[in-house]
Image 1 (cartoon, helix red, strand yellow):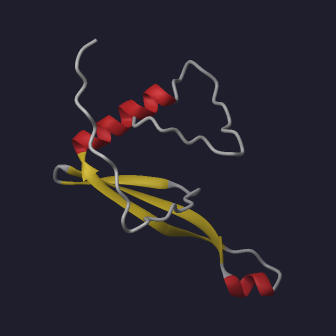
Image 2 (cartoon, helix red, strand yellow; image 1 turned 90 degrees about the vertical axis):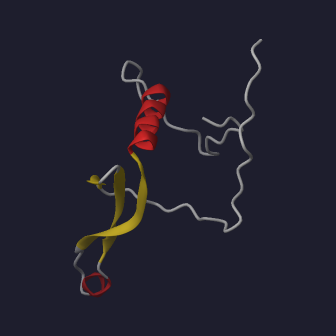
Length: 101
């Protein structure tokens, strides 16, 4: 077996929270960087109390990274979600793994 280069340890000292982003997303380019913008639909408060629903798309997160990292993300998604296999739902308990992709 070939010697594997150990991966650096992953730390999260600021306890970065997960953010729900179930709305449309977009990507734009600034030089050699891509910026992915994630949104989430949210109802306006006042109309709800008037019996109406008016939805806005709220920007919840922006990720800026190199094109090289975006290509790596694409490759990871293609590997984890191949087009020739049906999508499967993750179990309710989640899909955590100790494997670093």
